[in-house]
Image (cartoon, rainbow, N blue to C red):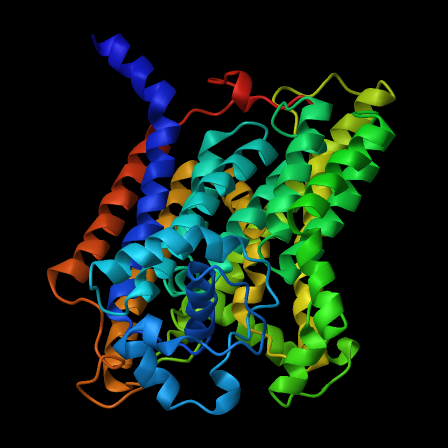
Length: 504
């Protein structure tokens, strides 16, 4: 009986841990979703307006007026206080995938008479998609570590517990779906490069499908997918993992079919594939600093990283923990240095094997090509964010979320290899504790800074009391499950199966 239990735990421990990591994100995200008043953050009204148009069988443009009557009292109150330019569906330059997924859930929350009406349905879709990204983050971390489940679990935990992600995933944006797609793209690219034991042609097909999903969410994800597709093509052909015609067909074809029409529509209506020029004109934005100046301005990136690692809201909260931010920087640096050292040592051992100076390195062998290609891909959101700001936009921290899973995998790998899986788990527990504190603090800040008149639908939280506090209980239970899974995890040299052992 004891042996059977041990085998069951060994077989299903990773799944339990991933479920725990998902609970960490979903619990705190649920709390944020129901404590945040309807349409408290300005882009929510436009995203919901897109959903409302699709429910009526219409595809909106960036100048389509938001149907306030279909949205309910809170949306009417919010739009009444907005200037004319903010009463339109200005996010209609995005392809419709996220909003199509939200059509049903938004109709349901509206039919049930829940506060915010269709808003809550879109918030829950956003949160669910982000939870899916946590699952893929586990696979990415595991495969890059040569099948080490503990690294994958710590990586998933770090993604789930990242303070700002829980906020972004809990409001009515499309960032959760974008994170799911871009995390899938990163993982698929790693598999093309030899991580995770995927066969070459199958991995190329998977990358093409993930790229199509990313392109169908929003323009920034399309650019991310385009770079990933190009890297995947180069790697697949260089390593002879696929034929050119097959690789190009799958890396380009699904994207053209799924969303090529949407970007062609943008070109016809707005003059460019993203619609950015018309949007900047609509909101009176003009080009600012040069791309080089933005990339080299320390303050910009310091603020972005601080928000991602320590802040719940994008707005600084009273008593934001400066010490935590410094600790986050030191921890991240240690993780990156340790990971780099291990990967470089593996590369040196490989070279020594080829020239006959050393015996073959013990398994598992790290997928070095996957490390190189995914590290390069992780830099793309930084360039896209800088370019967006140079054109007149804002460098919102959420634009860098596509880099988060790779960063979490690197830090998890470095911390686990530098110390033990327990040090990785301790890091996840510390970040989760910070997230819980910041989540409660953000609730207090929102109550003290309403966006509408006191007592109106736009100023009240969607739920309170046990309904919201239950979310934090789910987060704590999820952390306990993750800890139990890490406790029974075994290094791939002692416990491994086919899905854990890479072939490249």
